Length: 123
Image (cartoon, rainbow, N blue to C red):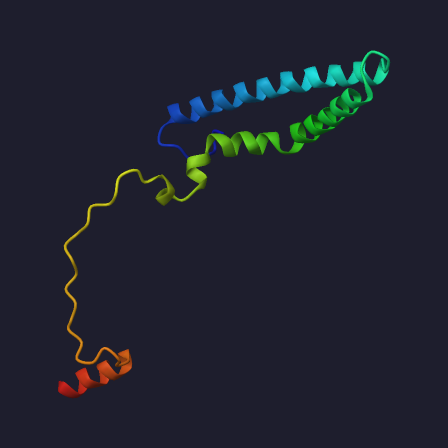
């Protein structure tokens, strides 16, 4: 998080603090799901087969995401605006400049090359 460009060091540190808080919440959720999965698999009479499947799936899901995708997801979520083009976040329309003067065309069906040849011949 500190290596990601930001305007000030304060922004970098605040993004790092936010990322650590999100990681802490995800780790706590992972521990809770892991404990539930352990109890469901070791005490099958207490929970039904659907709950067993759900908790085992969630345990495998959290373990795979913890090691591979959570770090990237946290970084991408916090730096979302930097990852997308700026034109998506423009809230005010751009001020229109003066209209560009266009040269009148003698024949609109002419190609650009023909117009250039005519201009050269007139010189």
